[in-house]
Length: 463
Image 1 (cartoon, rainbow, N blue to C red):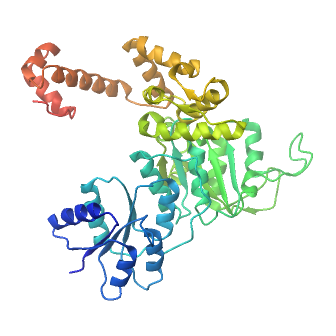
Image 2: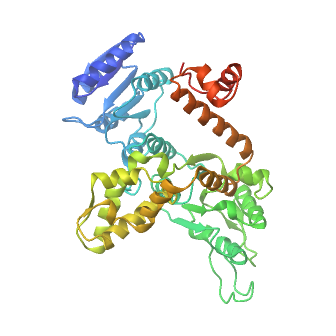
Image 3: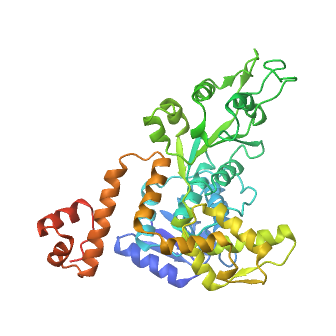
């Protein structure tokens, strides 16, 4: 039986994976360097290779490139403690099956190795890593999933729909998809469909001929022509007027179009990436967005997480934005104190990463010293914290309801009721240390009713 090869210069990693795989009946061979593993390939063939990315001598990526020169290669999983976007893209573009950020969950690692062993297929090398992008940072699991998806999509030209709240960095994702694609040497053209008046948007997208309308004193190429061979990024696609939705659908379906007032057929040679902060499914259900266009755009969907859902990334983002602002202004970089970082991590960040970047720029300009304390932060952040402390739960409910309504939410009464009951029951069980009879009396309901609701609401049993 073939074995799983584990390559890492850390003995503890080799031992831990070996023990975990042994419990699953999977044989292993251990190597402390890529050079040792390459010698072993002369006499045997592994089922799966699991290799660290940074080791003395040859790196995991060097090993991967050596393997790709052979006729048959096993699936390769790269382990890395440096799990940024560039590492993820490089790993996939160099032919890896997947990558495993350190520190990893052991059960997840075993499942991933098992899946690789089952498939045991070769992923072809496509091209070398593209230009670095340091604006997309994050060690959180949500960002790691996003990096992994971008890496996998580097081998594809599929249409992508990027969703997420305003300020999360959807255009950065679009640029990363373009930069790490086969169209990276061609133009990346972006247009915000919500920022251009309806009467001008058609001309902006498709161009116009001289004299086609009042003010058209010369012919003009549209964004589709400007992006020829490359990528066209349609931001805030959910706000596109209905008649232009129809025309866009026709262009995607037929791969050609006419300029406004034109008669010459123009081929549409672009990859389309669209983005929106709105719930397009809800807009389709409410009749504001064409369902057939939605399905054309929604081939691959990437969700960009809100900053409040990746709070562990705030420290590295804040440091990066402070250094970026200092470089732009030609001054020494400032530094947040530990208390200040802890304060920043508990804020709501409704403006997401963009709000954090603006705050770091404000601090660079306005803060008096190099070390930035809580009192040195922008007033809006300090006031936000006061508002969080002073506002009633009724006010918080109003704000949440408004946010869900604005994003096209449906059945919000049902969802709020579930959240309300789940929260009260959870806190009552915590207060009574899991004693359901006491909790049911505090809540004013029968014990059987409480038991039923615990099951219906998926509440963890604290008894």
